[in-house]
Image 1 (tube, rainbow, N blue to C red):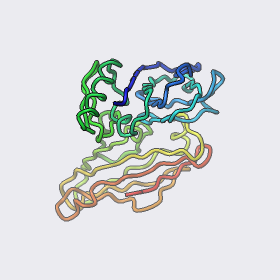
Image 2 (cartoon, one colour):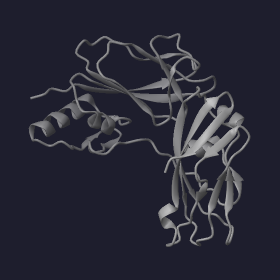
Image 3 (tube, helix red, strand yellow):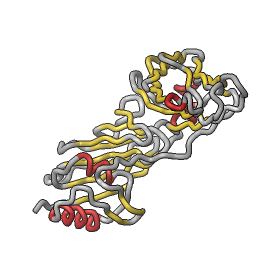
Image 4 (spheres, rainbow, N blue to C red):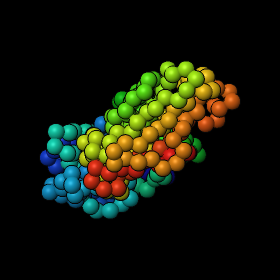
Length: 262
C-alpha cells in the first residue's frame, strides 16, 4: 500500500526574499507552490532573487516541482506582500491530487490517512476535511476567486478589475452598446510586477436582458485588442455569446495586447 507523508505550510512573502522550501528530505517527491494572496511573487533558488529576476507566480497560480533537490525562495515587488501555500509529498501522486489540496490547510496526519484509506478502498476522488475546511475532491481543481468586478456604465477598466479574473457586467444603456476601455499599457505595468511575455486570463459576462445592450471592449494607449471586442447580452437570441474570455499579455515595457480567446 502506498504511504503518503503530506505536509502543508503557509509562508508570508514580502519585498525581502523568504525561504519557501529548503531541500532536507531525500524522500521528498513532489512540491506544490500556490500563490494564495493578491500580489505576484517571484521564485528563485536563493535569497538573492528579485522581482526583476525571479519566475513570476501570479495570484491564484501554482508551480509544481516533481522531485528535484532545489531550494526555493520567493520575493514580492517593493511595497507588496502575499502568502505562498507549500504542499510537500514524500511519494509520487497524481497532479489532480495536488491541485485538490492546494490552498487548503490540513494536518499532515489527516491528509495522509484520508489518501491512504481512499487508495486502499479503490477510491480515486476522496474528500478530505482538515483545519480550514473541506478539500475538494481530486477531480475538481481549486483556485482562489475573489468577488467579481461589476461595472455598469461606460468606464475604463482598471488592472484590479482584470486581476479579479471575473467581470459580471450589467450595461445600463438602453438599446445601444456600452464601451469598456482597457487600461493603458502604463497602467497595466503599474498594477503589478510583470515581465515581458507573461499574461493572465480574465472573463466578462454581459447580464443585460435586452438584445441590443451589448458591451464593446476598446483599446487604450499602448494597449491593443485582437479579436472580436463585442460581448452580446443575455437575451435568448444572443445568450450563446454573452460571455467572453480574454488573455492580456505584456509585450514590452508599458505595452500590452489583449486577445479574445473564446
